[in-house]
Amino acid sequence: MQPQNNWDKRDAIILLKATCCWLCLMAILSGCARSAKSPNTASNAVFHTPTALVMRKDSDVVTASFHAWAMGTWETNSFGSGLRFAKEGAARTRALALEKLFSKRRSMSEAELREFRRLLAEQIRATSDDPYVVAASIRTLAGLLDYLKTRGLASQTDIAADGELLVTYMSNDALDLQVRGAAIRAVGDLGITTGRKTIEDMLSDAANANTPEIARNGCLALVKLVNEESLTPILGVFGKTSDSSVFGTAAFSLGQINKAAAMSALVENARRFPDSESCDAALVNMDTVVLETLNHPDNPVVINAIQATEHLWKDGQREKYVPALQGLLANNSLA
Image (cartoon, rainbow, N blue to C red; front, top):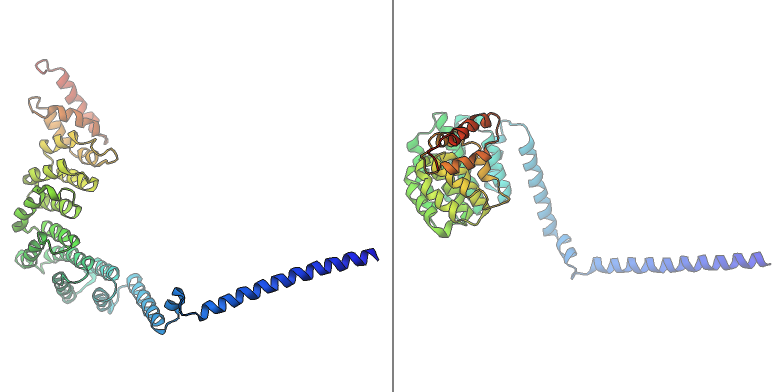
């Protein structure tokens, strides 16, 4: 009888556990059912309304169709679809559509190129639109105009019309900084010389030294417009800024100027931002200026040129500057 009693106890325990599990399961299912019916649940209020479902489906369709266009082969209707994506939808999608269209400029007919230019000209003037789209349109237009010029489809006079509009954008405080920055850069890329004075004034204003949209694009634009004549304003930004990105762009611009004064400034400020290698990256390409300075011991920045050799790490550079340093050591007239 004892074995039978043991089995009875085990059966009772198993039955009790099963009953408890069943009751817990029913409680959970009941709670889920109440949540599904409740209009006060935020997640259900979003996903169970017909309007929300339609919006999600429309968004999925747009995303899918845009992805298919962007990743697909360029065909007869691709240009028209691209224009539609560039005009409608989210700002990010529109900007990506502009990038895709620009990347296919060599596949476009002359009529399509002109239509693309008209679209961009309209969008840069729609300053009430999303700033991200307006800025992307400005950048794309600058690239397209340069391409059209190489194809003989646009003259400098044609380009000046859009360029002068961008000059007015540069100092317009009512516009978003994205738009102003893109306009500044485009003025430099397009060679709109009437914008020089405005850019110089903005770079000379200490208040802009830590505003990347103004300072960075201003340095790049000015060095393209006037090269070595941009030295003074860029040196001002380089010395005043506490923004590492602005500092890096100013250092790059000084490297483009490629003069002894620019080299000297880079050496003297090389350690201002310990994590930045921008000065090193500029100096390594200034070996001609460094060597020329080393070969003229009376140059007031010859000590900076000596220090600059530390940054000349490319193959063949050491073989050039070591003899120059040896010549300085052998010159007994030097201090």
